[in-house]
Length: 72
Image (tube, rainbow, N blue to C red):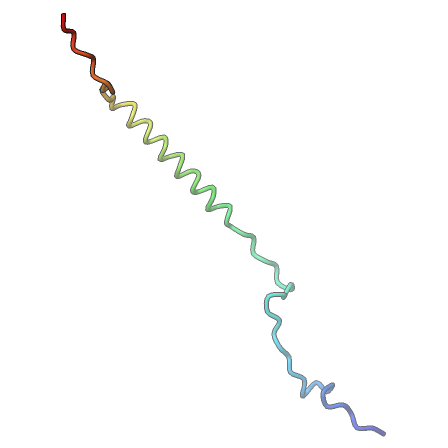
């Protein structure tokens, strides 16, 4: 009779935790899309506020080139 293999006995086996590939627990869904939606809404609100303020504060036109002096 041969001696039992010590590596195969449960008392001496070293269990290592599986990292990164553990599929027993369900993965959390990514919430990155919420950040994109929030950024879009904030940007739309900023543009809306900008146009509302700009529509209430008219800017006087300034000519880019002065008219030539009329010397007759």
